[in-house]
Length: 335
Ligand SMILES: [Zn+2]
Ligand SMILES: [Zn+2]
Image 1 (spheres, protein in one colour):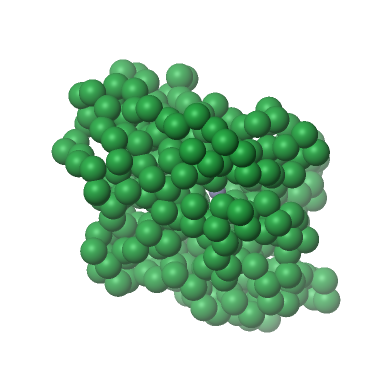
Image 2: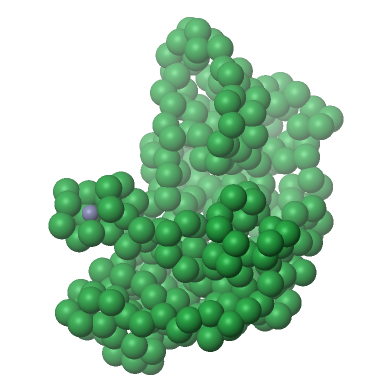
């Protein structure tokens, strides 16, 4: 098959790769959609040359391995968690495959990802796409599940005043779910004008340009009170402290952005406010199920996330372009 793999100069190149064969309990999908994720731009720098990225995907079942979990047939339209757990530990039983000590990650390090014509997945982590959900939206279930799990981890509910720091796809997914669960204020902060403009499409009740306005006073101007909840969706040093600084006393801060370097904070400033901080990662199995149910019932519409479409041959240049984003939100690859 053809796949976009990591080249020696840390760009992507389209190359021939081995066709995946389904192991026990696995399915092979013909990839129909795969989103480019901001985290791919970071991990491409240190994963092995020749590795295939891509973890936000949908596809059509083309092969079923021995003893699958569930009733799967070729031709089924599906999406799947990009995780393969052992199936035999407490975390797998709790449907939290990300915490399985033997968990393998599709497209983020261990198993080949979906920037390819075919990808192998765990049948236990696969979901049938509802009629209303095409392959493009099916590939958006992964980033939507990230947002849902983050909103859940922060306990956001009716009446909360919420600040979302960062309007990339994850920040916007958080804004959408924050609106969905009935928050009073959904204020999104981002220095990029086009991202602020799109925030309203995903439920923002107000936006802040942190380059021209201080976060705390700007939020209070819009919401009347400091934020009960601050959702960090940037992943750069210094942002967590700014979230602590603006959060209300007894408020919550959820750190969703991925930051792999040191990031000093002044803990006493969080203590004096008695803040609760959470560090959600990935999602639970049921976050996929709930996202698909809300799409099927037309209660959320993630389709506007997709701003660009490319095929496999167009992926390497689209991948470079997104390193200095202009108007891209989610770029969808259709191998
Ligand atoms: Zn992602
Ligand atoms: Zn396990």
